[in-house]
Image: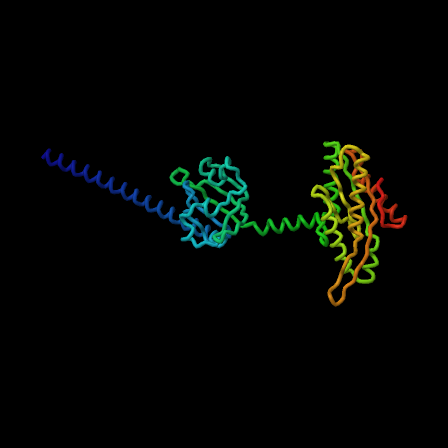
Amino acid sequence: MDELVIIENKYVIFYSLGLVLLVLLGVALFLFLEQRKKTLREKIQFQTIVEQTVNGVLLIDKQRKITFINEAGCRMLEYNSDEIIGLDSHEKVHSHEHLSEHERCPILEVSHSGKNYIGEEVFCKKSGEKITVHLNAVAFIENNQTVGVVVIFRDITQEKKNKAIVEHLAYHDALTDLPNRKLLIDRLNLAISSSYRLHQFGALLFMDLDNFKALNDTKGHHFGDLLLKEVAFRLKKELRASDTVARFGGDEFVVLVTYLGEEEEKARKELHKIATKLLSVLSQPYHFGSHDHSFTHICSASIGGTLFLGNQKTVDDILKESDSAMYDIKTKGKNGICIV
């Protein structure tokens, strides 16, 4: 009888352990399935977000290979996904023209440092055309290990072009494309600082076209605009790269001359020589029209100029002195030079 009790107890214990084990296996299976569902949901959510975003998304492994790209990225780079997957991101996509040989790629550096990188880089399309992208690169982590980089990017090439155009228009004359008054004053300030640092004279020539109004009145503003463009071309052609010619407004032009040396008398003679050359160039005939109807216009200039050294004169002083010298020539018969 005792043996039967012992056997019964063993069966009860065995049965109980089996039941507990079955329950534990059931719980483990349930948790496993729930985790798989969660992972699958997260994967679906990730894929949905990645595919619907307007930004490009790249996954790059530690061997620099592209392992994933979304539809937006394919459109921007003009690749099909099967064409770009497996390619070396540096050989085919990421251009490094601005990096020195000692610098490391900021995108790949993310996989080593773990620090995010936000910046502008140059990417290459399949055709070889280069685009500027703004990107955010973050470490791609699996099983608590960094296995690559996630790059989220957008094409800002046109934005940068538009910005450059706006900035150019803000500092240049729309008709002649010469620096305008604002840019001239900026450069004059720089020239004053440079003159002070190098102890070399600089100068400003202020010029007004003598016979411009007559062309506008008799032939119209179209030919007046053509003459202004030609004046700008002639002035730029005669000046050094270090000098600046600007359209100050209307038919007034200003020339900023730098590096005239340390001796005032020599600087004055050199400035007068430059002004004489410009006056001669501007006084040459201007030819307009077509074969059917052409005409020639003569338009001289009145030129006033002043020297400056260091910060002895302000920007306003220099502008007023050269402008006053120009008007002095105007009152004395035009077509001349006055250096004060």
